[in-house]
Image (cartoon, rainbow, N blue to C red; front, side, top):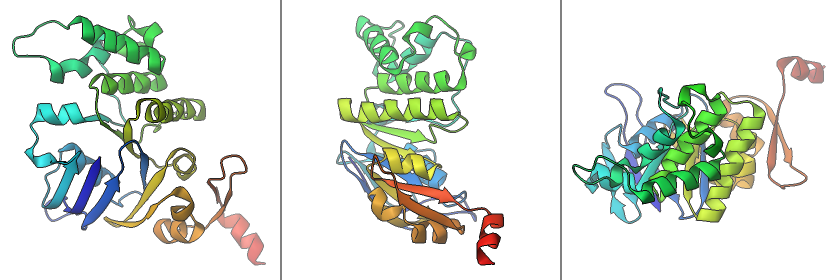
Length: 265
């Protein structure tokens, strides 16, 4: 679905990505992890077209992203950012904004299909009961679910998520990620998301790319990426990794300086 080859992008005289190469298989759920300043957001902005490509290629479903028109790109990719922009409009109208790439010139009103899709995805994301409420009246977790419903209304082949669980409590984190996992499994939707929490990345992602100083340090299945050696090198902090007894995925435990000092005695 997505092939990134020798990608270089960034900001004038500032941070740059260094020859990023990455493949995201169709129907997979892939996470991008790494410390602050490692290049996750720069990569995301390049994939979404906010930053220009200086070198290399980004191929979406066999097509060079630079050759796609904004409308064509919107048919392929939907984006959910970590900070959902909300307005004093109803949840239904907000979700229907996902149909804008399909409107024809001079078309003022939504068609029956647009409303049907909006209702379908509001039900799927659990915000249908709030359809007449204003977006500003929803909690942060509910707004994030509405943003996902809007993205799904684009009928994308690739869903890009920038820290979808940022600022959410644990219950809403699990609610959002369980939904993403279900969409991935039931709809065959390809998902690429930036995620800070390594335990959530381990539990929910099929594949993980770990970034470090503008490049990909390692990539693969969670068991291969999230070991203590990789984490301690990239994050420069001491951790302990064990196996989750139910999922068999890596579980990461932090160790405070106090405990480290006590264990050195």
